[in-house]
Structures are given as C-alpha cells and as structure tokens.
Length: 95
View 1 (cartoon, rainbow, N blue to C red):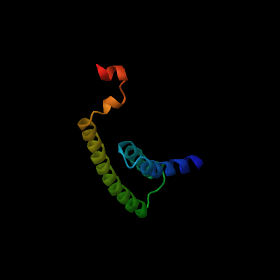
View 2: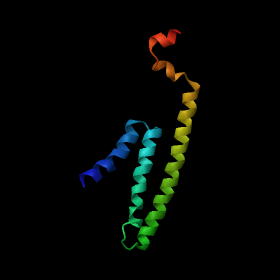
View 3: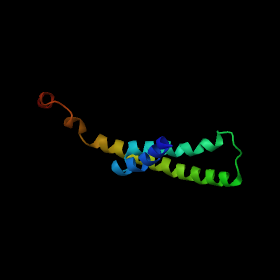
C-alpha cells in the first residue's frame, strides 16, 4: 500500500518539480495507464467501470497530445540553441 501511495504521489510532484517537461509527462502517462488494470484482474466489470474507463481514455488522449506537443517543442528548442557547449571541456571549446 505504501508503494502505491508513493507512485501515486510521485506523478504530480514530478510534473510540478520539472515544470511539465517531456520526462515528467512520460511518467504521468505511464502512471495513468495503471488505471486499466481493472480490465485484467479477472473481476466483473460494471457499467460504472465502463463509464470510468471511457473518462480515463479521454484523459489519456489529452495527456498523450500534451506529451507529444511538449516533447516536440523541447526537441525543436534543443536544435535551435548550442546546448552542447555547456557540457564540453574548455580545451574542446577553444579548438
């Protein structure tokens, strides 16, 4: 139960701390997919669960759209700046 609580809290904290970057959106989307375990645990699925499943699917489509948009924007930004210079040793910068 503690592990579930930690994973449940990690997603929103990660999104906030990393300012909703590509990495944190991947984590959040992965954690949202855990909700689909109701389909695989062998219990009977009620009508309410199907409604909940539909709502989760719509939220996941929105999260996937946000993920693709954020990651493509970050990739485009990284192509437009010379970020490699921040990690190069001083000898290589001079050459």
